[in-house]
Length: 199
Image (cartoon, rainbow, N blue to C red; front, side, top):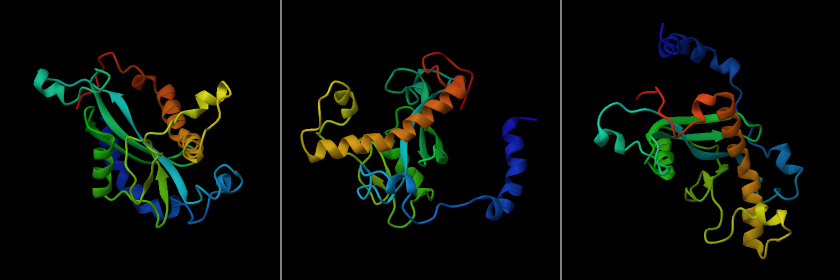
């Protein structure tokens, strides 16, 4: 039996059990944020972080068909939207977009398909996205990865740089979650070699 067929056979039962098994997050500020003066009250309505990641694939056919799937690093890949919470749990995944697709385009499709945040809540996202009712991005044109500067004792110079520093620290959870996933499933780590995963 093919793996995807097993998923479709189990899925109806999971959907029947979902009300007993799935626990949606409460509409209150996360304890981790409340107890952190660098995050509270600035990120009190944060419920997670989102980002796109590239997973390697192989595409049958000629160059014309492969061109869409060629990512910015040159290899064939698909752009996958990943949304996680503060505990590094996956909340939402949307796969199947070409490696050449912009992150914001993938997020817009996810929203068309029903992906939303709880009312008055949002996800932190990097500058590849724009501010929307469900995403909060860093200030543009302001240094972002200030933790590198902190390692050599360069402190934020103004409120926007300080905000971007705290934003980067908070958004780091999605980077760590993707890193752990790719480490556990090394199949997805090698983006430059040809893999037998077909579309």
